[in-house]
Length: 354
Image (cartoon, rainbow, N blue to C red):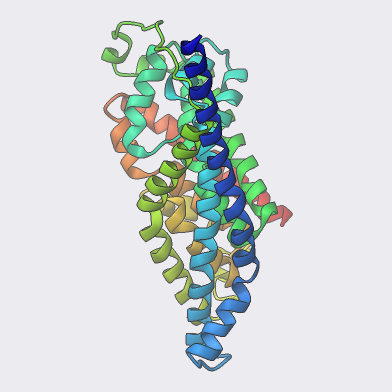
């Protein structure tokens, strides 16, 4: 009887702790909204009252852009990364592999692309993820859908696009990114390119066993969300500040419509040129999106800048170099060619429609 009472008290204590962890976000979120909705007025006060800058000058425009965008992006990033961090606690790498294992083409490509949105990924984890998927029986084409989607359509990119351009552009980017990931992976799967994976990869002992999943309490999931904020924001903050700094310079000093002749709709070659320029570059969404916003403001077309951004994020040179350890040259060329062709097609379509 005493043991039963102790167990009941322990369970009650855990529930009370979970409630406290639920109350904290409920108190912080209203403060977040008050600050976010008043950022423009706060920026005006800093620029014109505290710094006493003159309206209408290039320097004022650049400084206003920087002071307004930096806290705006960080507020959005912290909120969304925290929420996605909690969601990610339900999708361990082991569970992701189990969901995708044995999936047929297309259905597997769709599942892999969607899981890529909520799964942690960076270039340095490309090989472990690739090996883990292949070892678990995930088809090659399905694996590539994940490898394309995860770095390109992630919460950092979506948050920045939402904050700088609005929900329509963010939704547009997500849908086109997922489409490229799905059909690029599907095409690679249909081409039957397994023979161009390094031989030692398939010689690994197939592992059908799965580690038991750890059941997390709500408190632990909140802690996972907080850890995600610390980890992701800690890694990308410098890129955000530098990217917004470059964007501020473009916003303040580059003449209106200056980019129209170079990256505008009338220049059909601007989309493939933007992709060719973006592939060898290395940046993440945090660094490139503020620059993209500034380019759009100076006359660049949406399709061209989205193509540039996608090529930088999805076809980064470090990832290609890392994948060379497990893929033969022909498969890498096929992968880059299919994804680049999809990005170019998307860029042309958006330049025609928008």
